[in-house]
Image (cartoon, rainbow, N blue to C red; front, side):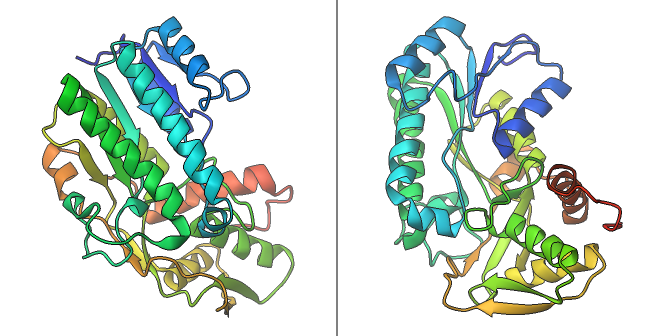
Amino acid sequence: MITKNTRIFLAGHNGMVGSAILRKLKSKNYKKIFYISRKKLDLRDQNAVRKYINKIKPQAVILAAAKVGGIHANNKYKAEFIYDNLSIQNNVINSSYLAGVKNLIFLGSSCVYPKYCKQPIKEEYLLSNYLEKTNEPYAIAKIAGINLCQSYNEQYGLNYKSLMPCNAYGINDNYDETNSHFFPALIRKVIDSIQKNKNYISIWGNGRPLRELIYCDDIADACIFFLKKKTNKSIINIGSGIEKTIIEYAYFIMRHLKVNFKIKFEKKKLNGTPRKILDSNLAKNYGWVSKTTLEQGLSIAINDYLKKHIIERDKFNFK
């Protein structure tokens, strides 16, 4: 049973989703949370991970650590995306098992599903067809993590669950011009155009792919919910039901910031998977649903970006 005094190891507390999980655990008064910086513990180092987990003796683990990035980063750094993620998850999951941890949450991604997948995507569609080539190494690593959790459950009677969130955004997101995901990239592009008095923004590809978005704190809420929940399924989709094209998201952000720019398309850039919306009925049947609207989440995300990246914020008056 998970209680407020359960010793919980959170791997990846500095990332967007990991930091959201840490905030959520603290806000819910969990008293024994263990986390450590990348400088002090390289999760790719098997011996170091094993020693650390044996030292802190966790009773539950949330694995939010991963090498992540947008379509460009996935396509450019394929070797790092598969090696680093395989190493991190193998070390944490296996070391947790060896330390006697019965409850673990592994965070996957909606990109584990086939490129041309029946929509909305059900958990059972995993491995039913070919993956999107640009993020295949990352997806394969995550699929291996899912299978590892399933195998440990079946062989050792553990309670290791893999949660598959859709595209996340929010506080502590990555806004790098080339390596970020599409939504933070759009936020940055619109704000940059406001700052530089431009009348347009550029979008990669044709802007038509459909994407589902979820605010990072909702994923954090799902992690804690399912850490405490007994389930007979080990793979669970975590979605919001919020779906728009890339173009529609761009206009949504512009309306929020009360501007109206032209959109230029960089059609030589990659589009990625044409559509990704999750069927989250399994999570709903267990009693979990996302709570944050796109308007609420976007306001928080923009304020976070302005606070950390923009010195003169007075001109950005939005609802």
